[in-house]
Length: 142
Image 1 (cartoon, rainbow, N blue to C red):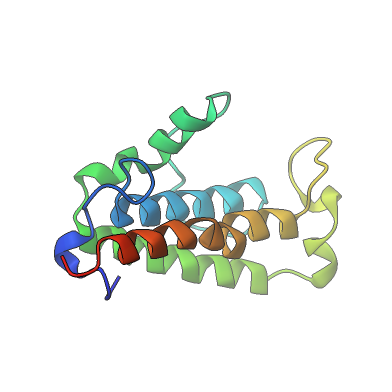
Image 2 (image 1 turned 30 degrees about the vertical axis):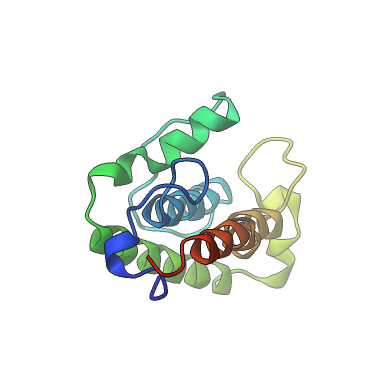
């Protein structure tokens, strides 16, 4: 974010028409979603967009639509708070809960809390970091 500069945080073009603000809002949405799906302690507002059954592109749009009207500092503040809540939720679990599909409050789940955390936090960050880096390199000097 520091490398992009605050003036460019809403500039589209990182992934399609997504800006850095959109990507951060998208990741924050899925951090919340994984806590909801995984039955993790949360005490926070749940994602508002109902994306169940939507095709991938429509689901991705829904994950960022709420941030479109938000100021950058609000998106960043929510992202930081969401990240902290994810850490606290995982720290509140026993190791065996992380890997037990029966711990997930979804009937017949074939995935674990660890799978949710991995796919919606640290692995998800990596999914987007390459495109952010490429965008920064492509637009250096602006």
